[in-house]
Amino acid sequence: MDEETIFRVGITSILALMFASFSAAYGPLDILAIILFLVAFILIMVISFADFLLFPIFTKLLKVSTIPARDYTIPKENDGIVKYVNGLYYATGYLTANVYNYVFQAEQMIEGEESEMVMGPDKWEKAVMSVKFPFKFIAIGQAVDIQKYRDDLEGRRAYLEFQYSKSESAPNVSTSVLEDLKRRTRVLQVRIDRLGAGERPLSSMMYIETTAVGITMSDAMSKLTQQTDQLQTVFNVFDLDLIRVVGREMYSLYKLNYYIPTMEEIISSFQFQK
Image 1: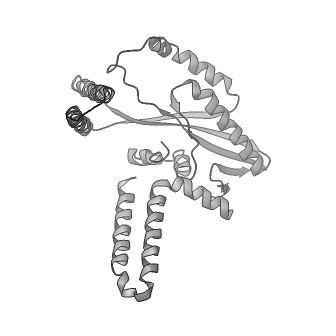
Image 2: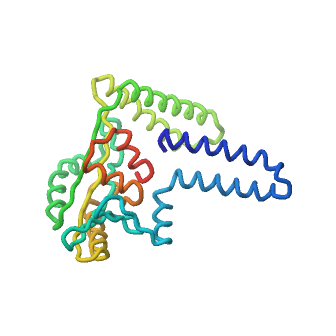
Image 3: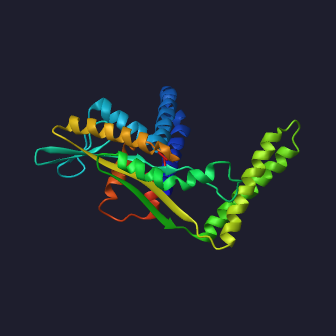
């Protein structure tokens, strides 16, 4: 959730609480007022945190299609953007392609992992060659503020050290819990040391875009689903988190094709679905 959403949720929550606090003034309707407040508060929180799930459900149930621009349509499922050109429908969809967290220098390299890394380029070539339709694998990165990043790491390290100290003094503490806290602290310390050695932190995001063509909108969307399913299968050989993007985030990614966003806008595109 970004700062703007937090601000709106905070203001709305305060107004809702004020409404509930004056519910006694409604006389016999005070119970109804409190119920309405609780329902409104729950809806605010759900929509703020999970609108990418709720919005497609609403549009599908109500059979509402969106027209974001001329000749473009977002079907009621909200899982693709369709353009009609010269009698054909072009459906575009997206997959997240988030790399799981890697820490190479903080942990001992397990047996076979180094050879897996060496085979990475060959895996990539085979994966790309096996796909017989157009797609784009997009990676966007931006250097982050070193001091801010270092402060964040040091804060997380201090919290883990506090947890370790608290757990160590607790009765019947599990050895595995202590070892896990020590390992996580060691990982953070290595990252801090790498910053001191001159390493520059990078904030990044990746996603996959593909377009299917059909003679009808349903035909194009059906082919798009087949393509996204195949891409998920093909790229599962890599350590990627592959999720089909739907709802508002999908349209945000589509807009990246014709304007240069800020890093905050990029990060917010996957703030829920990552």
